[in-house]
Structure formats: C-alpha cells, structure tokens
Length: 270
Image (tube, rainbow, N blue to C red; front, side, top):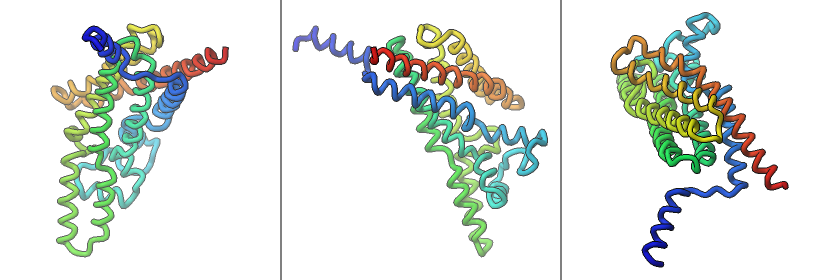
C-alpha cells in the first residue's frame, strides 16, 4: 500500500470513526429514544432537589426539607427511611447518567456525519458519566449507616462516623460543593450536551427548536459553575431554570430518534 492510499485510509477512518449497520442504528435509535423518555419522566437528574422542594412546599409531609450535611444525620435519615435517604444522596442520578449515556450514543450515531464535534462531545459525556459512577457514594453511606446502627460500643460508632465523614468528603449532597468528582462529571456531561446541541443546530437531522432548547438547557446548566465560583447563594437558580428546558429536550430527542429508526425500517422495506 503506497503512502497516498494509507493517507486516504486514515482520513476515511477519522471521518467515519464508527460505522453502524442499519439494523444497529435502528436499535440505537429506539434505545436512545426510550432512554430519553425515561430520563424525562422517571429518573431526572437532581431528584433529591425535587424532593426537597416538594417537602418545603408541603406537597410531601415526611423527610427533611434539605439534605443532611453530617455523617450522623445521614445515618439517622437512612435508618428512618432508606428510600428518602438514597433519593437525597442522589442514588437515582446514577440511573439518569446511565440513561444519558444511551442518549448520547444514539445522538452520536445520528450526528456523526454532520460534524466531528459529535464524537468529541460523546467522549466528554462518557468520561463524565464514568467519573460520576466512581464518585457517587450512596451505597457506601447506606452500608456505613447499617454498621453504625449495629455497633455496640462508642469506639465502633466513632469509627463508623469517621468513615462516614470521609465518604462525605468525596460526595456530600448536603453541601454546596458536592465533591470534586461529582462536580467534574456534571461539568463534562453538561458541556457534552451543549456541544451536541450546537452540532444539531448546524445539521438538518434535528429541528432548530430541538437544538435551541438543548443549548438553553445546557447553557443554564453550565451557569451552575459560575454560581459555584462567584455567587453560591444563588447556586440552585441555574439548575432550576435548566430543568424544564432539559425535560423538553429529552422529549423532542425521543420523538426524533423514534422517527429516525422508523424511517430506516421503511426504506429497507421498499
């Protein structure tokens, strides 16, 4: 193989980093569409914050209005209600991040020909998701809570409390700064969503409305980091504004992905 042929092959591999057979595309689009609907309806990000809002407004009458910040308070909450404790400790965000991974993979399959930025965004997204999986400490905190409750001496309880505080240093939903890994993962996943939305805007695969809603959702989401650095008193405002746009974005994405999958099946049936 001469140099020119090798160069053309390399360029072709870069332009087409992953080739999806049509039957795999249909599967990806359907799975991605279903994941987007589930993420919009059931496992939205920040379910813990939603619970706190419902508790503070009186819609829910049990549980704390805000997430605890100390190990002993978390242990007490887990013993009173595991479900509320796991919700406030952001366990269900793990499910959301997994769903977002499926969504981003389907979007990459749809947008990879439109712009190389889709591959970069997908890489950012998957790195962020992996970091979050490694950072979420909900099950560790639950296990320590059970051990603390079963402890029979003050020394044992002190040991488990110290271990709990160490876990909270990694991931503490009750603090303004949740932890380095959680913060990095949120930044990468949100940045990936913004880049993907900008690729949508330059393509004719998704509607302009879908792209704009995505840009607004992730643009306001990135405002969290501005608030974290300069105005922590309003840190809840950017995610609160971002949430409805993100919900609409998921629904629009689901609708389009299902249609793309159906379109491939119709073409093959002809």
